[in-house]
Length: 90
Image 1 (cartoon, one colour):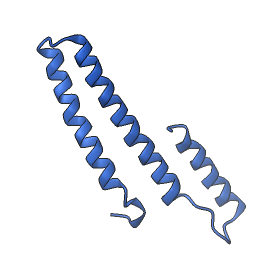
Image 2: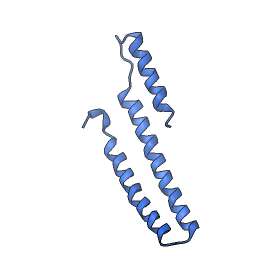
Image 3: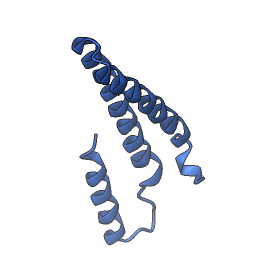
Image 4: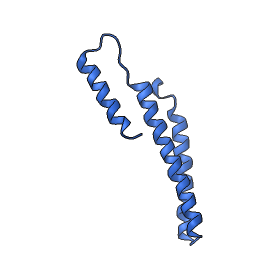
């Protein structure tokens, strides 16, 4: 694994937990459990995924995108464009 991606295992763990939780929510809906309880659990899944997404994007911006001495203007602009592209997912 790339050294830059040291946070990825924790993000994957969070997403796997959310995936398991989502399967439980699906089961709740299929077994006609109270809608308010299923909606509450679904909100928890959505929040977990949103948090994982923010961590993933922030990690990429922090560890994979940089401007270094000696970079050309074109390289710097490309990095800025990638930061902008990733920031829209925050």
